[in-house]
Picture 1 (cartoon, rainbow, N blue to C red):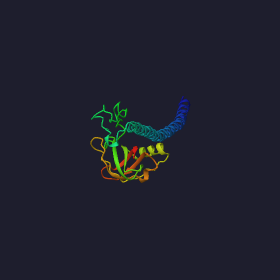
Picture 2: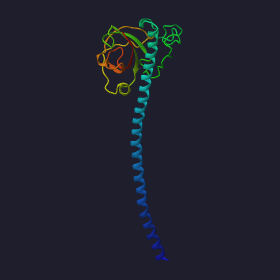
Picture 3: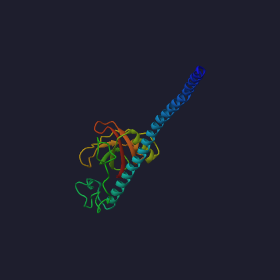
Length: 216
């Protein structure tokens, strides 16, 4: 009987020793899986941001093209640039209203893409020192772009380049859309009638989408 008990104790000790190996193996596998999940989450987050910027950049460009089409309709009907009404809260029924069926024939653009600091589209007739047309005034629409990466995505989609040019321009992005005239040098942008730029001007510091709607 004593011998039998000793054999049982010996077997129990062996069984306990054998169980440690599988436990350590499982712990190691769990550690590897945790690291892989963490790395995958970071990559997924980066891919999500990139895809979001691609979608938003397309939306900015589509809005710009739509507004340009509306302005071209008005110009074709002999409406002067200074007489175009861009404010849908004032009127959408006259022949000079951009957002009227009898005018530009387009719907007002959504402001959902714009940052909270400047949450309105701005339609400005600019007195330029270096613009697109041969006369003094160019009509552009501007929209505030919340991030540099989105600005780069807009330029990449619109013009095939990523760098964001700097323009010394003051955009009064408050109040209702207007024809406020101001002087600006668009030299860095002249090769591209649509895109995104950066300005450090205190009134409108940040990144801005732009689309040339008409030139004179």
